[in-house]
Amino acid sequence: MKLWQKNYTFDSLAENFEARTNAALDQRLARHDIWGSLAHAAMLAHIGILSADDLRAIRHGLLTLLSQVEAGQFVVTTADEDVHTRIENELTALVGEPGKRIHTARSRNDQVLVDLRLYGKEQLHTVAAHLLALVDALITFATAHAETPMPGYTHMQRAMLSSVGLWAAAFAETLLDDETLLATAYALNDRCPLGSAAGYGVPLPLDRAYTATLLGFAGVQSNVLAVQNGRGKIEGAIVQALTQIMLDLSRLAQDMLLFTTAEYGFLRVPPEFCSGSSIMPQKRNLGIMELVRARTRTVLALQQQILDIVAGLPSGYNMDAQETKGPFMQTLDLTTESLAITGQVIAKLEVDEARLIAACSPDLFATDHAYALVREGIPFRDAYRRIATALATQPAVASSAGGTGESEARAAIVELLRQRHYPGAPGNLGLPALRARLAAATNRWRERERRFSAAITALLQMPA
Image (cartoon, rainbow, N blue to C red; front, side):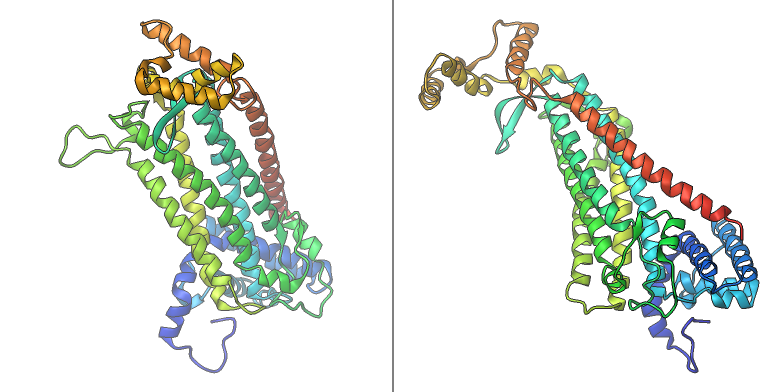
């Protein structure tokens, strides 16, 4: 029976159109809806709306349903419309009259909001863990190859001397910047919407702060209409932060695909990460990085889908917002999976130093020779033109090698790397500072997860 059931039968085509996809997605929110109901019931008892006996019965019923969810025995169907209806109906079947009181002072509008906020918090803990593990792998890789020479490219052409360490540390730093965005989105999400009801409050003395504390939120999202207007917008903010992560993963994937080709040969990925060809026996394809690159485009489309849905909606709840649930969940899935696989690949990535040194061709050091003249007192523009003229007639003038052997060439190149010694340059990557940023971010996320887990554990163990 639907929560809004009246004296008519809902058309089956309309029912399927409205509810089939939503009900399937709501399967993921069953635990979170039960947590929200436990906290809401406790608050109603706290303000004297529910009796102790009612609260005891409701808690018993909800915890019974939670055990069914965890055992995979709880299914939300199209006929239910949503997880909220299924839980309320099942609760009432279990405990009778008290189950009919659980919806007092709330709407399905603030129910789905609290479910999505709780779901978002849990998922972001996982995203952050994979993100920080990838950063750790990149910093470890950068440390091991801080002085491994590598051509730097502009316009897809060899440009200036760089290093493998600089390349890896660049992605570590940008992903740590993405963590800042992720933490900001988390903070926007970390406010309890319960008590907003349908967006206009209810004529009862609700204690919204009490509910927020029970559910492990940092606080309450205050204005009840702002809460409802935030449906899709908060999810959109999270997706926008995830999109920034995926943009960096896409660029990292593109570099890896390029640098592992036979033409470059700078990097090697173990064969267990490579798929093969059905026709060419020799092929090893880094398909996982191609999919990271492609799924970034999917995430960009999902971001736009959410923003387009909420743009221009009138104040208050509109069913359009239901359509943001799918792209929100899908983006979380895609980002989590992409971070996890990329972290695994980086942790086992190898370099071919001989190919890298060989790629540091004489023209790569033209700028170094120009700056050698600058150190002699020649104005940079004159030095630039002198080297450009020399290169036109004597290309070898830009050679870096102090000798003909590979070890001598490497030593000469590394010495040039070390001359770039200001903070952030190839000779001074600032890896200890990156490590400190990583440690601080890791501690913050662990504390967020600890507090949330402790609150939910306490909620489930509350005496009735």
